[in-house]
Image (cartoon, rainbow, N blue to C red; front, side, top):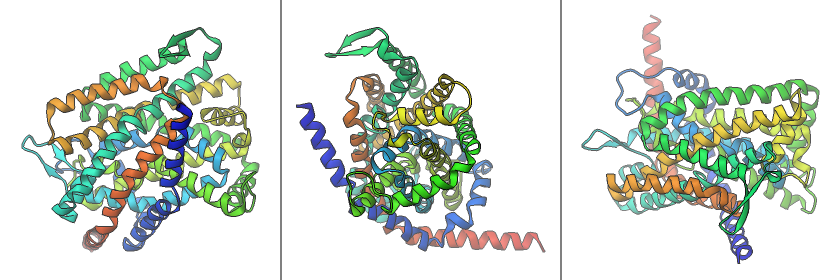
Length: 476
């Protein structure tokens, strides 16, 4: 029975993430790049400056940096460590190339999401921010499109509760802990009809408890924790990956050639024709890239809407740095380490085992130390993703229920229960389920972004023009 269900999920995932959706997301990013005149390229420096410099006097619930860290807490997770590995294991090294392409144009998508989140956000009677794709769909496209906003909210709840927010993250954490502590050789306990190592059970229980302590506190609690963990762990992980790259610098040119060859089918993956190879690399690269950086998914604008700012374009610039940090920096480092080590081609390795093998190959010192470093990074990355998506899915629920406080409180406990149950759910279907909800969320969001691209372009043009005029006056 389970094999039939898993097969059906895999088939639907393959259909949903086929060429039409891939083209919609990439072409949507290209269209936004053209409309915005390549803002992600020529204003990246300004965006990075705004990222660490909060705006004074803006309305909102958290600082711009806090909103970014909340968004990054949801994006920097298993996708950066496990997602890259699984994409390359199936699609070959070329998957990393398409992941990068999707990210470059995805920065324009993320910019537009952040801009529209501030442009069309509202405040309730208690002063809490109401914002995200559902609000720029309803307030930007018009009331007749409210059904599209509701569809996004439904898919967002599914993604948080059953996909990217809970199951994939807790599975990644418990798998990493199990591998490091050799949980398969440890004592096993029979639960829910299966045997699980004591390591898996303890790790799952600890993560559930710590997540519950933060989630019950709501957005401000999540933001405070994220502002501490996210920058520290992101820097630590990138430094470790840089050590691998720098100590194997002579192998980098060959790795880049292998990535490009794989992207265009020059070096075919065993068992696939040239066309199939390209599509497979593109499909897995774009799907895992979206899973990792969430550009076009519509999740980041939910956090961006809460930022203390009065200018939509400024927040758009801050928001787009999330994709740059997540994919251009972190995923690239992971991918290069995997290609250099050749771990992606080992049929005996799966998921986190691939990245672990790459770190063991590349980092100086004993293998146990490399495994420990990766485990710690994965645990914290995945933990913050759990926190970020609890807020995202909660806001989706609030949109559907009119921000009913009682329902929200009950939902938080359901979300915590899903975290607890995550380690005991079949890993085979987990990533496909996450991909499916990501794709379903992306559809209404990308439609809205393309429809409102004119608004984003006009706002950006006016902002940059006024900024140039202010700088000219300051220099006279």
